[in-house]
Amino acid sequence: MNSDWLATHLSTNRYGAFELTDAVRPGPGVPVRPREGYRVEVYRDPGLGVRMPMLSAAVSAGRLFDTFLALLEPLGEVVHVVLESSHGGGTDHAELRRDHLDRPVLESYLCEFEQLLTHDGCTGIAVMAPGRAVEVQFDEHKLLHVYANNLKPFRRALRRAGVRRRKLLPLLSEGEHLHHTTAGYAEEFQQLALRLGVGDTDRVYSSDSEF
Image 1: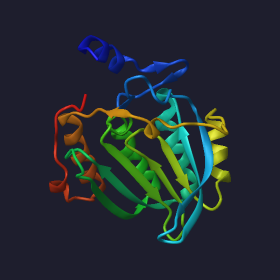
Image 2: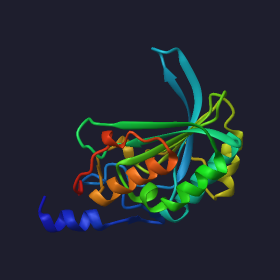
Image 3: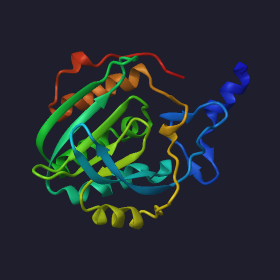
Image 4: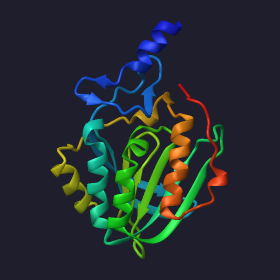
């Protein structure tokens, strides 16, 4: 693998009609070709005895953030939120939680940091409904995941966003892939954490680009 080929590969952000954000790229050889859609399956954790319907969605970059916001609406007016960071590199992973936040307030903060949430490969967020087993994740791969006993409101939101259900939808995270971040994004993550009042940003470290 020469440097010119790698530079070309990393600069490729469109596969057919699907546009990637800056956060992640397929590995060499494109083991999983990015494609828009969502799939429905069952999440199982035998250790905890958990079994719950879930959906996973890959959405083209231009509509990704708005689709994420649309998926938050069924959670209700008050939510819990967890910010996730892997800016420290290696196995270091920080999770910073804030409970009982008004959803419109959360959404206004998230809109200020749309660039970070959409294009940083080391930032993720999970939003939960208090008192209900319902969770929406916008992960570091810029995939959307929903865990809920009733997926219908979320499927309707995806349908309104023009995202189709697919029986077969390999996800970028399931093959070899590369994440991208910058020291600037690590600093923005700290700013978002402070804005949300989750603090404890000493656990979040800045780093140079992963690619």
